Image (cartoon, rainbow, N blue to C red; front, top):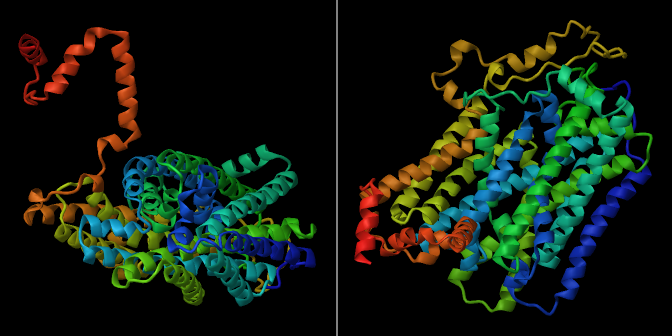
Length: 609
């Protein structure tokens, strides 16, 4: 690994910048623990007393799932597979629309602390418990990856101590979650989002200066085939195409924003529904800016290394190390700036981990402890702090397990897809289908989970072939240092080999094509199965007789769309009295839908009037 150009390691200034970020985060937790020491209830601790406004909440929504994985993996993804992950922008927009119109109104009017409480109100206790357990498993797995991923990538490039980093991240996080509750989490997220964008900016500005302007970077990316925005191939087995990213991405992100406790807990803590909706839309701008920065950073990465790819030449051992490698390479002479980038990657982690810990505490208290004990508010408040502590420790433990897992971005999206998909199906059944009953809900959830687990695990065993994932060519002709293994890489068969050796064609099982489904489609598979099975079982077990409380369903009055139409109708009515007949027809409400010819109805009605 004694590589050519990058010998730089962390300077004192870098450690100072990094430590500063940790200290500020801890200080925020301390501050809120001190100012809110009079509030004793666990509700205040877990939902910020429902007095937060749209801006900090929206920034926090953005920060919590834009983790280090975004900072390190998105640019590497662009470098290897091209910039079409920018199509996520569309998925984000659709997600915010669906969340604010379908899920937010129902959760907000019920004023619940845990989203899984809804499952018991709508179905039964068993559904709630299963949902809660799945959420806890998903979140702990995810959080482990989030703590471990940046630590590994940064350790191998900057020589920062691996477990030191993992454990310090974990401890600081656990500290301010345990001390300050949701308010601390939200405000530290705001700071951390700032640090993340600053980290991207430093890298982008320096690369642009080095490469002689933004246009050069764009033309390099274009020549390298990285601007693959024309990929409208509908084949579901292809890894990244317009369809997989926008449709698969939408399902994944709705399962994060619509029903994931960590996110719902935040926008429910807003003052009003309007503030909550606003926070979602401001957060969309945040998501877009982070996505844009990470995609452009990926283009800078390609532009700098277009002639000499550090991954093929063995200077780094995993694509996730590309960004830290670039940082040490081009910013190594500026003490403090590599530290800023590392702080950015870690802020991403901290913000995600802290949200997860707070959400896990909320769910455990609300779903597993409160129903079975009668503790006072003060005891519950202490207990939720204890829970934060416990989950913090658990997640650090998970980081140890994550060290055994493969490609990071894919692993996380797969976890979200496999578990989040079926859960999304379950909530959709509850909110949109009045005749879904608990038998249908449980069987839908279980079958959706079984199916998506089957694909997910199959895909780990039989990874998709290269013609489906289509990594773009990398180049090593311009490398001006001798490689230790004395192979001339100019002819460069290596890079092609390692990605295109599928398990020999004869051994690929018949189902291999099903397994090489794009990892973005794991979520829709689970969701659609859960809804479909749930509906069929509900209908067969007499779901149509079910009487559901209206507040548990999405009513048309809940949607902005309804109010817009009302406004529009009001405006039209003022302008012309001609539409009165139609309005009366609506009020009398006994039009036969089979009649296509409305004139009959109108005459009937007007004669009756």
